[in-house]
Amino acid sequence: DAGITQSPRHKVTETGTPVTLRCHQTENHRYMYWYRQDPGHGLRLIHYSYGVKDTDKGEVSDGYSVSRSKTEDFLLTLESATSSQTSVYFCAIGGTKSSTDTQYFGPGTRLTVL
Amino acid sequence: QKEVEQNSGPLSVPEGAIASLNCTYSDRGSQSFFWYRQYSGKSPELIMSIYSNGDKEDGRFTAQLNKASQYVSLLIRDSQPSDSATYLCAVIRGGSNYKLTFGKGTLLTVNP
Image (cartoon, rainbow over all chains, first blue to last red; front, side, top):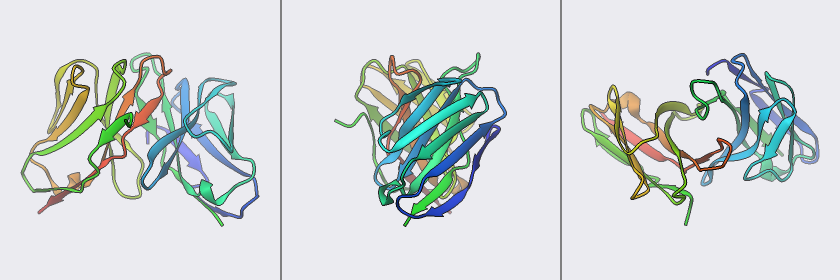
């Protein structure tokens, strides 16, 4: 998984609770991304970061926030989880001198919101 | 029109055959094209990238790009049961700051 870890790998939570997912990389890649994957929708970009403290919204950003205080860590927060946020969440990294646009994915986090 | 379209499948081929996976995209400004493989319950794994019109070969895999037709394909020669997975086509649109747009994937089954 190209030096990417995600934690937790599985989480069950209740509607209305805050949830934070962590992505950690050891590759010193500039770009980091959060996606969600749902049946019938495929992979969709939630937020991404193009540097420390530099983030921007993706296709499905409502209800999510992110933070990146260090190159190696990218956090995804659900401020108040809803059942529609039940999904598999993937972090990806990209952006090296030799391959600016190629992305590599972490193992994923399966989140269930009851 | 969806930005990146793939036939959902399932595509079923016998072992040893050539599997052909297709993808079309809507944005003519798209610059970079990728194929990922995803086994059930696992994360996407990069197979190939292609940037220029024509063919690019890597082992049993060949990616083909035709920008005029807005079409990218993946051929898998000598298909093996271990190739059974969902194949995702992804595109980076021009000016998108390296954001990938994915198709919904094609499920490939290789029968022994």
